[in-house]
Image (tube, rainbow, N blue to C red; front, side):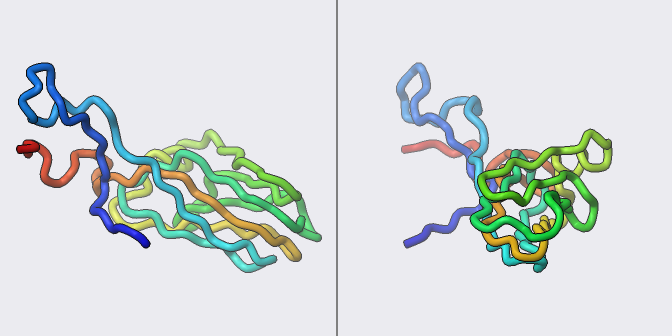
Length: 150
């Protein structure tokens, strides 16, 4: 079973100090999401993130190590943003400090973005990207904000 929501998904408390049923001030934040794709050798594992997303983490879960090379590059729309080890185990991406890569991680842009990783020949596992979906301009103001819980 699954449910579909319009992003960004915000979590707000129901009660204000007056306990009158109105939604309290925005003091919580947006929901963290993740997407996964299978790693199958030299075929790129890709996920598509919604416009405006901020990338919080990238990992691979390698059950069979690559037979060639120990690191592959992670790209967002073709721009390298991280290196990712493809040895057996759970490996977190090593993010670069270049301005272009950091800018893409902090906001993937005004159009949906493809995140891609090629582990290398023989590698088997799962590619995972953790992110917060936001509006295309990077804000987290939810649709329907300002409504009350009556």
